[in-house]
Length: 437
Ligand SMILES: [Zn+2]
Image (cartoon, rainbow, N blue to C red; front, side, top):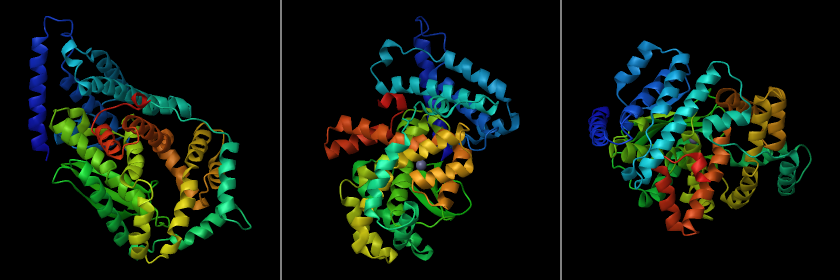
């Protein structure tokens, strides 16, 4: 409902202008109001979207801003220069603003989002960054490096669970076949998973009554699932069925893309920041920006928040296995093995770092993923296509999850109710990845 949003935005601009008038005798008067800077930022993101089809992940602001960006097709050089100028115009916090943490976070967040935009402009102009330089510039974080020995010890442990001859990845693939969800059961299984994730999330999150999403099954994509946020508390969730889908994917996907993951994150930003405060910059989501580490990190950590302890395995065994027609006596064992495999997540970062730094080619990256991340060759190959498109974005999933987990658990001190409240507070605020440490 963009008309409602526009009215609120206009009210926000008026309030900020009034604040500026009140400050004219102070040292804060030389900058435009924050809402004007925010509007210019949105327009710069839209302008950069004209050069980079993957850049604008979501936009639900005024349609005419988007139409203008398409018409004007501003050159990269000017987008970069305008971003630099805008960063310089961000005003310092006035003493009266210091008491509102969200207002302080907003300044730093917008500044850092603009710096990431400048870095992306540089990349599109041909500037070469190493994997770590790129992730710092775009996502405000650098993933730790692990030697092969780090993964080898985990692989030994998994190998003991899956005894037999042949390569471990082949043994794992053979073992996993018994957990495949047949294509005609997929929608039924996902629907049950989504309903459960929603039921577990609702008591802890003040979700807008009109929130909802639709699920579509698609093929031929470099990702396995995607949440396209449409505004008005609605999402389109797409599931890629190119590769076989196993039973554990249902909860992963329902939590990550839906509740309490991306769908809830976007809905809370829209409610608390866009509608309640009139902060237009949250009507747009530039994919290659620090916002993505928070988005992916919360979406992945949200799985544990929604299903603490044994809750996930119990629900899978009692509800999802029967729905998929699978043998539920295997549920606990499979969950144990999957937990070990999940620990290999950082192997994906290593493959991406080496591949994107030009140290190894696609075939070597695929082989590395098969060996150290236990990905079957077709999945490993799909992963390298993901590297091509999204590059150092890969760190947002595992490093993002670890940073979010540390942040929330430190603040909640082991109390499950506080874990939810701290998690929801993070979802609804503009905190930077470097601010999680
Ligand atoms: Zn995601």
